[in-house]
Length: 252
Image (cartoon, rainbow, N blue to C red; front, side):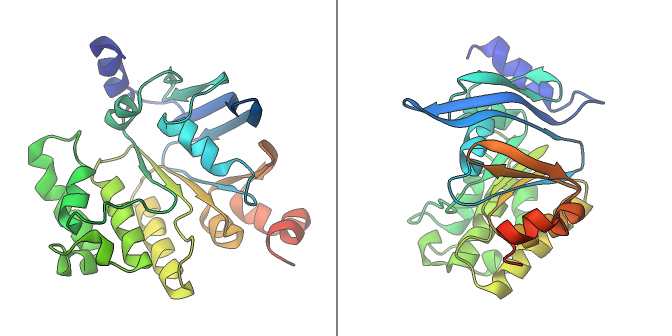
């Protein structure tokens, strides 16, 4: 992507009065196998939108398409009304798309504070100190251990670090991919408490989560993905009480 296109991507985060994210007929492939079969979703400003489904449904693949690390074979991705389908991943970060990835993917040998700083690599130097302060306020345990290698943290603390690192980029769209994966119930509660706090603070969030009950309970709107297709969509709490969803994803 050339400098002009990067500048355009940087402008997208400031475009007013349109949906923050829109996927239109999105398709992608792994070799000959099509993983997404024309998925369309919308994330509006200040919404928390949840995407739920079983393993292999295509949830993480969709996130990888939005962040730019998985190529799109057909369809389009619009950020605040402007196409970014072919934009480089770094341009999308500069435009305000920041992700806490599945599996956390912290840099184990690096200190916790240096991991956080990595999340702010597109930000002006003056923003870094403020971002660190905000991350430590949100997750005090990270401040306490900030000089330790990230690999010494527990799984729950690494998830806090991954979330804090994403927030260091000052996202206009925060992507959260399976934030509860492999965590103890009390830690899951804490992670979702922070997610709700971010939502209440006005952040726009796309949440991919296998824990359908938790994801639907906090969602303004939600999509149920199955084998690369959107099977159901609607208000989060409405889907939580939907008999089909309850049988398939809530064990009820």
